Image (cartoon, rainbow, N blue to C red):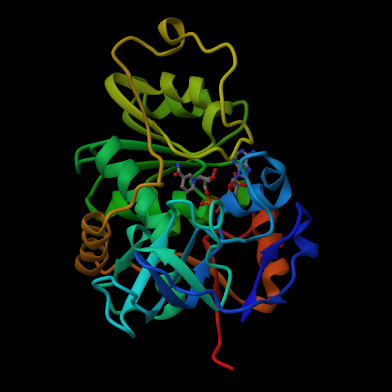
Length: 325
Ligand SMILES: NC(=O)c1ccc[n+]([C@@H]2O[C@H](COP(=O)([O-])OP(=O)(O)OC[C@H]3O[C@@H](n4cnc5c(N)ncnc54)[C@H](OP(=O)(O)O)[C@@H]3O)[C@@H](O)[C@H]2O)c1
């Protein structure tokens, strides 16, 4: 089968398709015939440097998510031919992932699909919607009356968060560093777009002098201390992304850095459940949401897919579909 095997950390242009044996199924795992997979920052990080970390064993087939059909259900409750999505739980990191024609995956990260979408659209859903949904509705407890500030809103995750927040009627303030993307965010439903530059605080307080009550932080520790200050009393911030290339804090003093009465939360997509995936499919169906697809590639163009993500100009979810031979 075709697969993208990471042999060593490399540039996007060094990614290519290998021919490897179809993996063998085992008890409590299923064989999935992959139809599409989304591209994630996680794979860029793995490909460019994390693959050298002592806890990663290369070679490894990349891919933290995929969608497809059950080719062999093994001892699971799944049926042959059933449509499924799969994500996380070590996919593409501790065991081979979704950048392939077939993947053997533990039952715990494979979920039944209850929605009628093309493979490309379905491919945009698992990781991005699971993360946006969990961040907004679990961590931030978002409601229609909330004002939500999304930092890093032009990311695939940010655009889905804008879409989900607007689908329940919240007011959305969204940021980009690129003035050329203001219209994009408005088209996706943002009520207010702010430029993330040195004037951000002035722009923000001019409209919301008392702050908003919810913040979704996708740039991460690089901007989180400032984002927390945009919250009103008893507001909640969820730190979900690390677009600012900083995953941890040095010199973090919780007493001084977290404003009084502000709640700091975070979301990690490593623990998906069927219950949550089913809720997401229901929400997408009921609100008639369209996944914000940026571009669909073939597996042979995996280098182009990674280059597009690196360019920061995708403006949506990048998906690879696998064509039948
Ligand atoms: N917690 C979890 O479990 C979880 C799950 C999934 C994803 N994530 C994280 O969520 C984030 C979004 O992922 P994605 O796949 O949706 O990303 P993406 O689509 O590749 O994001 C692209 C956008 O990121 C913005 N960006 C890039 N570098 C930036 C920087 N240094 N500072 C501020 N903005 C920057 C750019 O926006 P502008 O140029 O318009 O400013 C660009 O449009 C990533 O950090 C990812 O690792 C976390």
